[in-house]
Length: 114
Image (tube, rainbow, N blue to C red; front, side):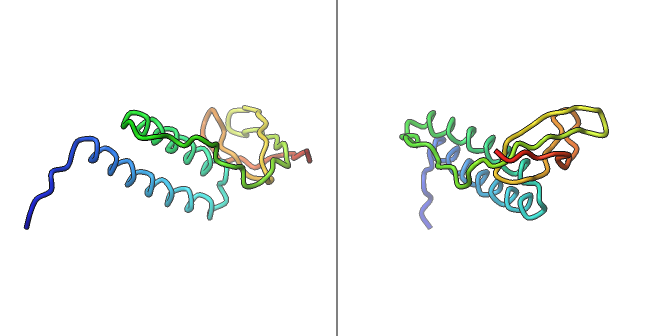
């Protein structure tokens, strides 16, 4: 069997592809458990990291933005019962979010139609 020489760049890109596949699985798992906000944030972090890897590799990056699949329809208001942190976020649905202070999953106490 002939061994294939793999460059360091190819190794890094292959690792990143595996990381994105794992991240995609994690996003789907979080989505299925109703944690849309955390799923979206997790995917965003992984995609930003991947874009950096692609930029460093010399390969062309995506030139057009990823289209929004659902319009923003709600401004959700959250209050963490653990530490009192309050925040708002805009989403396409009335979904749970993670407290920015303690990372607890919080349901919106109010949602405004936009």
